Length: 304
Image (cartoon, rainbow, N blue to C red):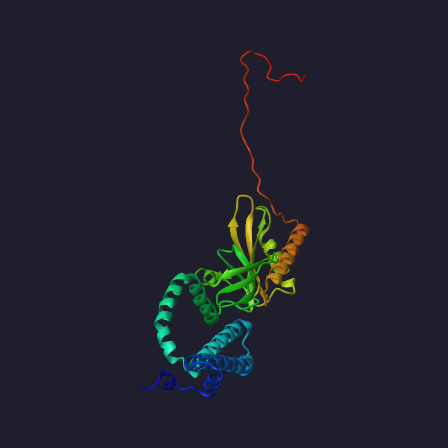
């Protein structure tokens, strides 16, 4: 019968370890561990120095923005790590070990999947954000019926980070941005704004309309095409509502607030100059007050 230690084929490293006093089994395990570490380190270092920069340059040549580059680079690193582990296990001769671990890994993956449903949901939502591109880094977005809004600072596969206009950083799960309606006012190259001016019932509607349009045409940041327009949209209890519609180019949150404020201020000043009233609600109470005194005395008592 051939001894067990002679049935094990040792390489140069194993033979050297056996020569220093290790048993054949110990030398075989140590040799496999050394091969695994060396192969893993070599593939990882070569991949980080060559493969990752190569992928990054390829993405730059395609003029991809940060929205697309970050997830792709992350997936490249994950792929590199998986490749390094696979080759290292094979080079170290741990094939049987991988087969025996397959069943355990499958059971573990199922348990982890059940425990990480929210994480997986956010990961899938992150993939959808990458493919559908409802917004990009630098866009101003609103969600949850306008409860939250801000500028996108970072998009990852699990969360999106949004800086509010109060300088607060919101870390938003990606599923919250894909499961509900999301508003991206700056997705196109122009944005339409609306504002309702209320004038008095005795004021001239055409005169007020001309002023509203003229001030829109005078503002340097309001577009001439499409042209600004005015529609009578409301007959309120105390005023007539004239809705102004105008467009701005290359919109951002700062431009939106500034331009609308300047425009409304200019219209208000022209209304004041032309004598057009912007009324406020007035409530009139009607009726009488009847006081009775059963004793025949005056209900007005002298002050003491």
